[in-house]
Every structure is written in C-alpha cells, then in structure tokens.
Amino acid sequence: MTDEKLWLLVSLQLSGEATPAELKELEMLKQQDPLLAGRTAVMERIWQANHADVEAVGSAMPFDRHLQRLSNHLGSPVLQFDGEPEINAVTNHRPRFLHWWWTAGAVAATVLFGLFFLRTDSKDNLLAPKIAANTISTRPGSKSKIELPDGTQVWLNADSKLEYSGDFSGRLREVKLSGEAYFDVVKDKSRPFIIHTSRVQIKVLGTAFNVRSYPSDKTTETALIRGSVEISLNGQPDQKVILKPNEKAVIDNASAELNNAGNPRKMKEKETMLVSAVHLDKKDQEVYETMWVKNKLAFDETPFDDMIAEIERWYNVTIIVKNKALSAGTYTVTFENKTLDEVLEGLQFSAHFQYQLKDGVVTIL
Amino acid sequence: MKSINDDIRTLQQKIGLYEDMKAYESLYMLLSPRLKNFCFSLVKSNEAAEEIVSDVFIKLWQIKNKLPDIENLKVYLYTIAKNFCLNYIARHFKNPVIRLDEMDIEPVVQLGNPEDLCISADAVRKIKQCIKELPPQCRIIFQLVKEDGMSYREAAEVLNISVLTVRNQVFIATRKVGALIPASMQSILYTDRRSAS
Image (cartoon, rainbow over all chains, first blue to last red; front, top):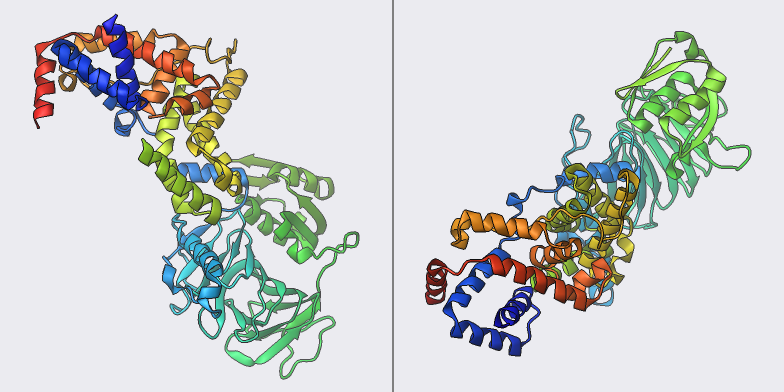
C-alpha cells in the first residue's frame, strides 16, 4: 500500500502538480526507506529524459521547407527580405510622447521587413547603394502586399523587387522597382515619393497607380488610378509628362527615346512617350492594368507572346510555344483564381492548341 | 515548464500583433519537434506527422490576427494537431478508429540510457515494453505530461477529458513503470552523490 501511495506522490511531484504537503509526505517516505528512494531517483531520471533532447527523437520538417509549404498554400505572400533595418532608425515628425502607439506600429512594420530571411538571388543590381538598405522581392508565381514605413501600401506582383532606404526619414521617399507594383501612396506634400525604374522615374505626391517595369518587357508602363504623377526619363529630367487619372504612359525600353503614338498630349521637345487611356473592362469598369492586385490574370487585346510571358511569371512555369502561327492573335480574357490547367484549357477554346505539362514546363503544340 | 509557456506567450504576441516572422520561426523551432512526436503517436507515419505539423503552423499563420485572444496557445496547437490527425486517420486508414481511448497509439517516450539510469539494459527494455502495453489513452496522457511537460489541465483540455482522469492515468503509468525499477545499491549511491554535490 505504501508503494501505491509512494508512486502517486512521485507522479504528482514529477508532473509538477504536487502540493507542498504532498512533497513533504514524499520526502518522509523516502527517508524511511532508502531502497525506495533509490527507485524514485531512477524514475526521476526517466522523467528528465524527454522531448527536450530533440536530437534523440528525430526532428520535424525543416523550417524553410515548412515556409515553402506555407507560401504554396497561401498562394501569395512569399516575401523575401534582404538587409537588416535598424529598428531605432524609425523617425517620426510628430511629438513622440503623444504618439507612442504610432511609433510602436512603425517600429513593428520596420522590424517585420527585416524578419524574412529567405535568400534572394541578386542577379540584377539595379539600385544605387544609397537606397539599397531594404529589399523586398517576390518569386515567380507569387505576389505580396507590403506597407512601407510611411504607411504607403504596395502590392508587388510576381518576380518583382522593391528596394528602399531603411527609414524613409529623408527629404524624399525613394524606392527602386524592378517588375510590377501597384502603389497607394500616403499623402505627404513635404516629402515627394519617387519611384526609380531602369528607364524612368515617377514622382508622386499622394495617389494610387500601377507601375510595370520588368527587365524582359519591351515597355515600361505607368497607369494612374487617382491623383497625379509626374514621369521623367532617366538622364533626361526635363522631358516629363504629367498623368491624369485613368491615363497611362508607355515607354519603349529599346529606344532611348520616348515615343508617341495614337492620341497623346503635347510634350516639349521630342514626343517620345505614349500616353493613352487605361484599359477599362466594358462590363465592370475595372482597370485591366491593376486587376492582378485582386488576383485576376487579365488580358486585353494582348498579343499571344506577351500573354504567354505573363502566364509564365504568374504560375512560375516555362512555356515553350512550338506552333509559331499562334503568335499572330491577340487575346482578351480574365481568369480569376484559376489554376494553370484551367487557364490553358480556357485558352484552348479560342486558340486551338494542344499542350503538355511536365516538370513545370508547358509545351504548346 | 512554466518558462516555456512564458516564451510561447511572448512569441504569440509578436506574431499576433506584428506578424513577426522571426517569432513565428522561433515558435516553430520550439514546438514542432514535440508536436511531431505527438502526431506520430497518433498517425504512426513520419511523413504524415511532419506534414500535419506543418499544416498546424499554416493554420496558425492564417489565424494570426486572433492570436492575442488565445489563452493557451500550446493547448490550442496540440488540439488542432489532434484534430488534423483524426481527420488524417479517417481519410487514410481502412478501418478508422477515431476515438482516442480505443485507437492504437505508438508511444514516443524517452527513457535515457541504462548507464545514466544505473539500471540494467534488460530493465530498460522491460520498461519500454511496459509503456507500449499501457492502455492507449494512458500512453498518450503519460506522453503529454512527461514528454511535453504539460500540466494535468493542459493535457485534459487537449484530449477533452477530465483533469482527474489525467491525474489517475499518470499515476497508473508511473506505478507500472516504478514497479519495474529494481531496487539496487547503485541507484542509492547515485542518489547520495547527487544530494552531496
């Protein structure tokens, strides 16, 4: 019977559930019987061997593999952050004591940027070292949304990279973009927001617009949704154009010149930048240029080859088009939350092709 | 184990309020090995257990905004893990038994090696066998309390049973294992050494 009582007390003690009185009773029992005390000591050591020594047990899935699964599952935010921003570098124009919560939020936002650790393959070093303190990039096949230290919201499309200085504390808010992003810029007249791309720079006061500047694209596009932006060519600061809402500017990347076709407004000197209306969906009055933000893969009279390039980036696949005749057509279609297979099957209705999907490579016959 | 719960609490706040990825990783490193063992006990497949734990943490990321309101995150995660395991069993087993007190449970319980325990390898083997032969519910309760350092209340919440049941089952497991521990002079000497140092 004492045995029963003893092991009950031991089980309570080792579980950390014993009361002081029970612990005292256990001590007394052990003192009375040294042999029992020896056995409880062994039991103690058995309890101490537990999952704390993880190595002995075999570990769980490595975190990076888990993160990959997480990204695949969410179908979007695979953020990749470079550079460690300094937490205390966040500055604030408002009196601190009044707005401690604001600072806290800003610090949190800044900290967050430093906290992703997946490595980016830095193939292209677009940025002058001056601004390159933080890098946020997305892989092909994923998108993400970020908030900059000033509160500006940025939706980053697949295979894109945004770089900015750590704290946005200077006279200008400057970022560098490669790829496509939709900006909703917080108004701050004293500190213009400037976006640098490989071909142009865009100056903003407070507005929402889409910038598309993939290195592989033939053109750089800026589509304005509201507010106003001023676009100038790199190296030609006097050559600029101001966009009105629902207009877009298209710059030919190949020629150093801005070209001007269709129905443009007058610009000084060479008329080199094309300004046209954004593409509005006839039914919903939705702007095609920004549909990707809502996870819609949308094409409006898009040439076949451009469309294929977009699909490759969207789904992170390689597409080989064997049937060159397909390149002739243009396509207008919107896919919302569709799988690659569904998109390809959808296209088969109008394009009449066969395709094979194998190891992430699509072959269109 | 108190300190572990404090750590979890801190990480929980960081993830919930700031979507702190570093804290998310820390929490994963802290809990995923234990959770994996727990899942393995139920589904008895390493790969499935790994994926279920990953799914649990995906779920955690999805509900991160609600984290500040969750009282005991460890219990919460184990409960989700248990439910995922039961779903898995219902889907993948031919004759699924999804009652914890009836299903077979593979215990993952560490004993330590015979030299450290100062008992014979044979005694260790017998203890292992004994733990394997405990009633299934008893096995998993013992595992949660001993291996994962859960309080009786926490284990009770995860398994949806009463605290008293947990207390009784831990006692039964301890008594059965204790009965197999031989009384030897060695272990007494060991005890003396420890108390002397």
